[in-house]
Image (cartoon, rainbow, N blue to C red; front, top):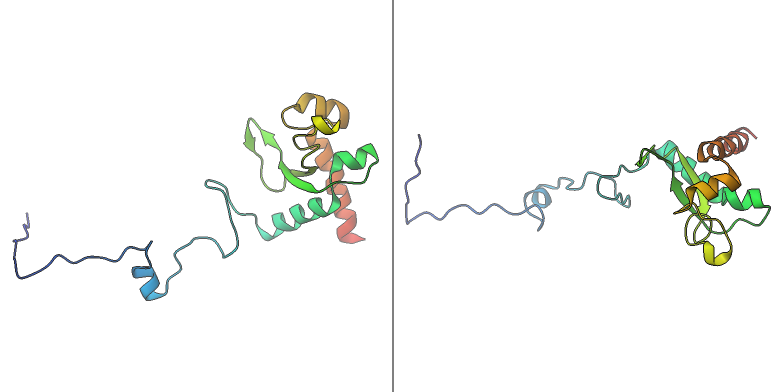
Length: 144
């Protein structure tokens, strides 16, 4: 086995830290794995172009529950549909107003999806049915 000799005339080499602008910054490599401006939560994947188009559409369309209630849609957040407690993906999303139909709507007289899923679905239908409705609207928007 190779054993390095202690030589007082030589100092150990200190490698620059990539965090403090070390090797990658000196060579000009990209340190981050995602494009500038894309913020993804730890463990979450940034949306693709197609997924971003879909989510932009549903936010622009407004809250699906407000539409069903026949009222002007309020500022909308992206709600990810879950299966077994896990997000199904960015294409399985609904636009729900926040606060309101997404969460925190009880003080506004609304049935919120969080944490009252059963009451929300009793009033507006299953989340996957609402998704189908939005997909039809999206298809008409794309082709019309």
